[in-house]
Image (cartoon, rainbow, N blue to C red; front, side):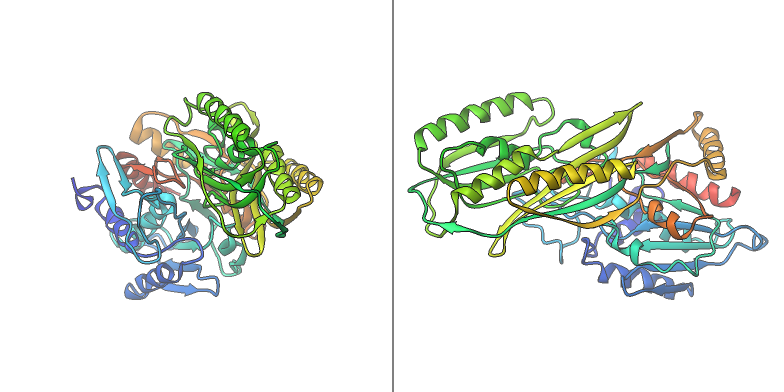
Length: 470
């Protein structure tokens, strides 16, 4: 089956179109211009701001002009991650969509259904003049996957909506009524070099399951950065030549490598190989495709000092990572080490703390800062956004009624540990009732990302009927 054979046809048509356009976080100019052009071709009121956010409006269907304004909201950027053997270039190559049974996935890359599917829903609604609805607004933001920079920059003074439907949730049959806030911590050490030992080794970690650091942080998957710390901690006279891990701050690191020296190669190899066996055994259920290898290598450049190398590895080994608190099935607080990078400026590590409770998020960041300072590093809070507190709304009742009529069961009402822009919008659109939903997406932020085809159709029907009924 091909994409153009899937239903709803308009949703899949627009999803395929936007999949041809580069839209990694920070590279949204082309997709933003496409959305603005979409509006202009249909004579819709629209604006594009300096952050490349798009706000557009569609008049009510005849006879429904007196209905309250409803805003549809999604983000245009996507997390761009690919498998190690993929030569895909996200800056120019289209995402190759693959129909695989009941799902659509991509060829060795993230699919971008998070949140390209939300954007496709909005475009399908705004393109269809046969639908019945009151006046509509669309808010399509940039940089949601990188600290929600678009939502932070958006001027909401002209937003007239009484209700906002965020189409950025990823579980079928669930209405999201609250989300976690997030805090990004940037951890750095300046370079400090010294003469290297003669014995050079290379450690490589690959094939980990990875995943979304909000939605899948409770799956107890191995983080490659934490694994690197565990494998190298207390290695005699360790000197780091170079290392790297992870690709996105909000993705569980699925790969890592390090080139290093030691004054005792034989014992180091024996100890690290023992730790490799232990780790692979401990995580065989959550990371069945994990591969960790150690081999001899070479290095003819300068190396980090023993003291600095020890401090960095001790910090990685000690740093909080993973699930911190879960209550009644809901993830409350977590931490994720997303990126480890080394260049001429020094070593950089990203840590993202999430929590529904701001004080818990802030306390977690303080713990990380104390650890970093203990090991002679510097930690800086780069961004922080508040959570969306759970609330009861008319939207919850209306959408649940429609779902039950269509599917014979109630929707689950829940909060999410993923970040949603509703939290930010609540700061400026205090009186707007909000809710979030969307089709079933598995493996977001990883090359395993896939979207359930039937779920796409079910949730689009929910949206269309909700617009008529609210």
